[in-house]
Structure formats: structure tokens, C-alpha cells
Image 1 (cartoon, rainbow, N blue to C red):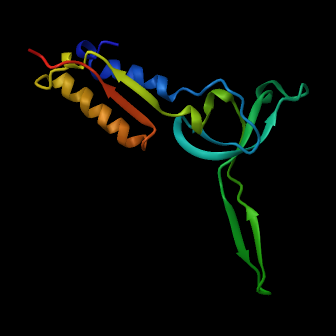
Image 2 (tube, rainbow, N blue to C red):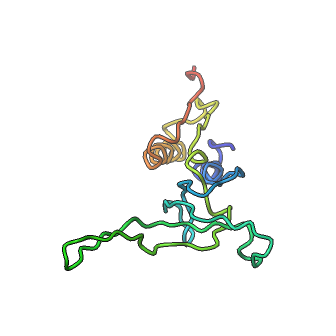
Image 3 (cartoon, helix red, strand yellow):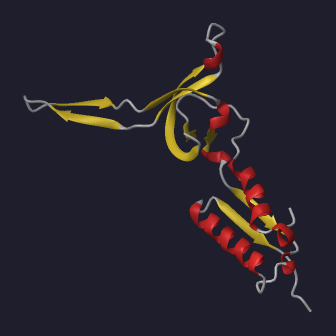
Length: 150
């Protein structure tokens, strides 16, 4: 992408690639991030992977994910009972799930000397990159390469 010409719009296209789920296999028990209602950031554990040939088409090769934790109840006799809460998504497709290893990465920004900080578009790109690195909590690095302008 040509960031010096297209600015933040080109950067947004590049960043989309860092958000796409992988193709690798997931297993029951894996902790994953799921896209719920169009947004990432929902972490849960796979509790079922339906590969049955008898599965209905929308659920074939889908995953059931538990997002909640455990809830503890104190009973009147002084004992306590622990149960799993019911925050589940049933039949989640692979395109809406990514494993922790599939997030983040390294972006190499070559010819960075062409991004003049005196230009508004360049400042916006650098601000957006900084914001993205902060938001991804250390899972996203940017390598800036170029030379000093003469």
C-alpha cells in the first residue's frame, strides 16, 4: 500500500489483514477470540466442534463457545455450589473465530522517509499506527525503515 498517497485509508486496508482468522485447526478446550455481532474482543473456550456428517448444514464444522465463567451459589445450609453460567454461542463458523496465535504480527513500513511529518496525512498515519499498537497490547509491532532525507 502507498501510505504517502492514500494515508489512513491505505493503512486501514493493511490492518484488516491482521484481523483475519487463520486456517489452522482448533480443538475443544482452546481459548479463542470470537467475533460477536460484528466485533472482535470476546474471549471464550471451545466446548464442542461439530464434524458429524449428520449435522444440519448451518452447524456442520462449527464450534460451540462458552464465554462465561463459573458462578458460585451459597445455599441455606451453608454449603456452596459452583455452576457454569449460560453465556454460549452455538454454531460459530471458523471465519468468526481466531486463536491467540493468530492475532497480531509485524508490519514493516519501508521507505518511511517518504512520510513527511509536515503533511497532515503522514501525521494521521503515524498517529493511527501508534493507537493500533497500544490497542493490541504488545501483539503488534511496527518496523520503520528508511533513510534521512537530504
